[in-house]
Image 1 (cartoon, rainbow over the protein chains, first blue to last red):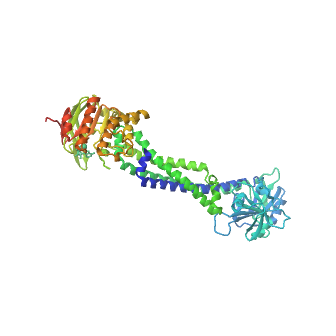
Image 2: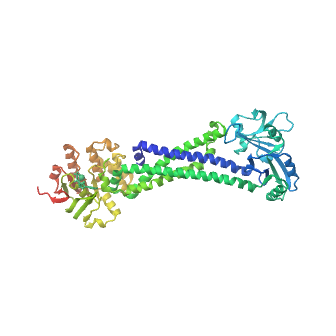
Image 3: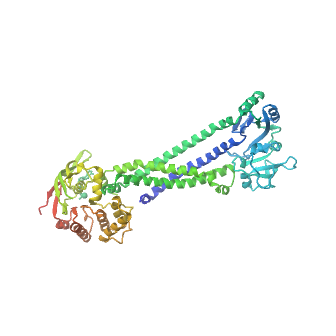
Length: 386
Length: 225
Ligand SMILES: Nc1ncnc2c1ncn2[C@@H]1O[C@H](COP(=O)(O)OP(=O)(O)OP(=O)(O)O)[C@@H](O)[C@H]1O
Ligand SMILES: [Mg+2]
C-alpha cells in the first residue's frame, strides 16, 4: 500500500529517491576511497616492527616511509648507524614514490631500493609466486621483483621485460601479497634505484634493528645523539605521525557524511510533507473510519523509509562503481580488474552501515510529516477536494 | 445504538465572522430506524452528521451514544466506536485511491484485527451483495460514480455497524442508480436492523424514511409534510 502511495507521485518519488541515491553515492564513494587510503596508511604499521627508522630531518614521513620534503641522506650514514653499539644491523633503503611523471595523487608504483639479500627487512615472510626469485647480485640484467597488483595490471610474470623511467628491467619474481602497498611496489637493488632516479650514493631511509634487550626508544635517542640532522623514529612515533592525518581525514569524512544525511533528511521531509498535504482527505478518511493514529504513523514512516531503502540501494551500487572509477583513475589499473574486488574497495560492512543509516535517517525524516498527518483535522480535511 | 443530541451546536470561525453550521439541535434516534435529514446546500447537514458520527466535536451541547455523553469518551474509544459501531458513507465517498476495491473494503476489517481469510471472505460477500463481485481488483478511479458509492457502502458495512450514516448518498447519481442505492440502504435497515441516518435532497429517500427532519441554517425541525 505504501509503495503504491509512493508510485502515485512517480516523478516526485523518483526525484526524491534519486537525491537520496546521489547523497548515498557520494557517501559511499568518499567513504570507500578514504578508507582505502587509511587502510594503506594503517597497514604500514606492520612494516619494520620494533625497529627504528632513520630519516633526514625535515622529511615528510607517512608511517615509515618518507614521501617528500628534504629527503636524502648520504649512503655512508648507514655505516655510521651500524657502528653504534646498540645496533644489531642497519639497512639503507631508497624509497621512491613514483607518480609516473603526470600529476596524479596516487603513485603508479613505489620503487624501493634495498641492498642485495636484505629483502626480508621490508617484505618479512611474504613469499614470491611460484617460479620467481629475488634479484641476484651477479646478474648482468636489471632484475626486479614486482607486487601482485602491478603484475596483474601489466601481465607480468617472472621473465617479463619492462621499462621504467627509461631503464629496461627484467621481472624475476612476483610478490604474493594482498598488501595495498607492497602489491604496488617494485623492489630491486639499492644501486639500481639510485641510478634510475639519479640518487648517486644517496638514500632516504635507514632501518636499524636494535640489539637484543635494547628498547627502540633507547636506540632512537642514541642515534639522534650521535648523528646530526636526522630523525630516528620508533614504531610508536611513526604511528603518532600518521595519526593526525588519519583523524583529519576521518573528521572530514564524518562531516561530509553528516551534512549529506541532513540534506537527505530535509529533502525526504519536504517530499513527505507535500505528499501528506495532498492526501489530507485520505488521512481524514482513515481517521473517520477509526484507524488508530499509530496506523497513520506507520504508514507515513514506512513510505519515507521505503524511499530511503530504494535510494540507498541505488546509491550504494552507484557509489561502489564510483569508488572503483576513482581508484582506477588514481592507480591506472583497468576498471575490469577492480570489479572482481568490488568488496575490497567498498567493504560490505561500509555498505551495510550506510544502508542502515540512510534508512534510519529517512524514517526519522518521516516523523514530522507523520505527526502532521495524524494531527490533521478530520472535518476540515474531509471537505478538501483533490 | 441509540443516539441523542442535546442543544448540539457547532460554530465555525472564518476570518473574523462566525458561522453557526448546527444550531441547538435536539434529536433522538432509536435503534433500527431510518432517518432522513433534508435541507438546502450549506444548511449544516454534513456538519450535523459529522458530530453524530463522532468525527467532530461540538462547540457546545452534547451527543449521547446509548446514554453516554460522547464528550466524556476518550479519543481511543471514539475511534473504536467509529471503527466498529458506525459506518460512515461520505458525501464524496472517500475511497482510498491507491487501494483496490477489495482492499478498500478489507481495510476496516484489518483495522479491527480480523485475519486475512476473514477479511477476504467478508469483503467478497459484501461486494457481491452490492453486485461488484467482478470489479474487486479495480482501482476506485476506474469505477463509475454509482459503483464507487456501492463500494463506499460495502466498506461502511464491513464491521457490521449498528448505525450507518450516509451523507447525500444519491446526490451524484442518476435516478436509476439512486433508486438502487435507496433500496440497498432500506434493505440494510430492515434486514440487519441497522439504524440508517441519511442526509439528502432526494424525495425518494424521504418516502421510505421512518422519520424525516428538515434542517435550515443549522436549525433542525421535524418534517411535517
Ligand atoms: N470546516 C469548516 N470551516 C468553516 N466553515 C464550515 C466548515 N464546515 C462547514 N462550514 C460551513 O458550515 C455551513 C454548513 O456546511 P455543511 O457542509 O454542513 O452543509 P451541507 O448541508 O452539508 O451542504 P451540502 O448540501 O452542500 O453538502 C456552511 O456554510 C459551510 O460553509
Ligand atoms: Mg454536505
